[in-house]
Length: 128
Image (cartoon, rainbow, N blue to C red; front, side, top):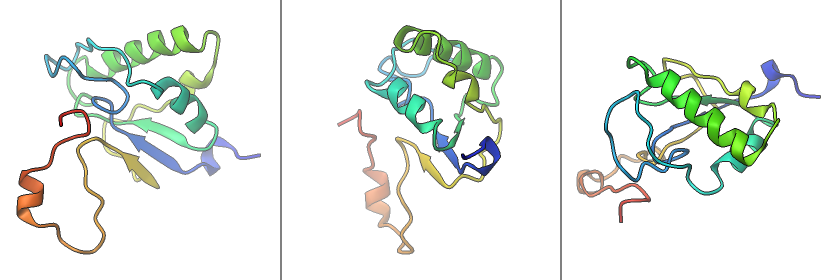
């Protein structure tokens, strides 16, 4: 059986990955929108295989961690009542050294530098 300390870290962004972020940014302590479809099911399954760390630009801003935690607990309870997986989520204030990260505003570095125009024209999945 894999203990928490033996699990690799999965670092997940919050806005645009877990939180649908359809209203855009207001302030760090305000999370307005519902989850991205399937996010709670994914998190529940991921905690079985990873130490899941949610790290966001909100993470080190006043009220940001608390707002994300309350939001996650509320939606986790709606989709998976009485489930304990949500208590396993880690909330670092600095980006952890992870095996893998999931972020809506990232490009995988393959050892080849991307074209600057590719970077300038980048759009996250939910902003076609």
